Image (spheres, rainbow, N blue to C red):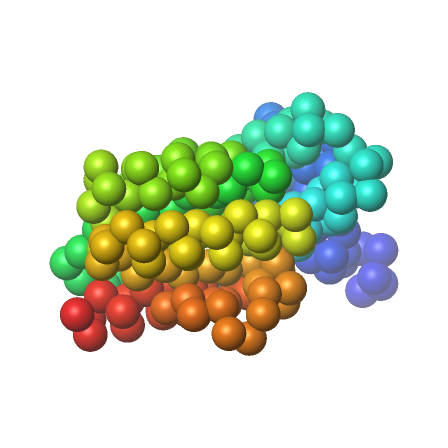
Amino acid sequence: MTTDENPTIDEPSKRLTEMILKGEDQESARIAAEIVGGRSETNDIVDAISETMNIVADLHEVERYTVQQVESCERAAESALNAIRPGLKVEQRRISGKVMVTSLHGDPHRFDKTLLLTMLEMGGFSALDGGEELSPEEVVRNVKSLKPDVLAIPLVTTSAVNDLLRTRSLLANSGVKTKLVTYGRGVAKLPSDSQLSAMEEDSLSILSRIAEILISR
C-alpha cells in the first residue's frame, strides 16, 4: 500500500494547525474529533494544539497577529480541546486543596490557562478560574478573596515576566501563604533566583508539581 493510500497522522494534524491559525473553531473541533477517532493517544493532540498556540504567541509578539486574531485562535484551540476532552488521560489525584489559575496583563493567551484548568478538573482537584490579563495587584486581590493553596500563572510571552515577579513580591509582602507556580515557555526568561514554588515549561509537568505541593502541606 502506498503512502498516498495510507496517510499518516501528520496530515490531519497539519490541517488542525491550519484551522486553529485561521481561527476556524467549528472546523478545528471537527478535525480534532476526527483525529482522535482514528487513534488511541489523545494527549498527543493536546501537544499539537499547544504547539500551534506557541506559533500564535510568536506571531503576536512580532505584531503579525492582532489581539483579535489571537482571541480567534484561542477560541478555535479551545473548541478542539473540548472535542477531545473525553479521551484525555489525566491521573485522578483526589488531593485536597484549592488551585487558582490566572493570567497576567500583557500575556493575552488564555489557552494555557484553559488547558491547566481542564486537567485540574479532570484530575479531581478543586480548580478556580482567577481571571485573565490581570495586573499583579488584581491577582493578589483575588488570592486574598478566594484563598487558594496554590496560584498557577501561565507565562507565554516575555512581556509578562516582570509582572510575574511583581506578583511574587506582592504576595510575599501580603502575608498570604499561597504557593506561586508558573508554567509555559516564558519560564526560560525568568531569573534563576525567582523564588517560586515551581517552574515548568508544560501544563502536565506543572500539574504533577502542584500535586506534590499539595501533598506536602
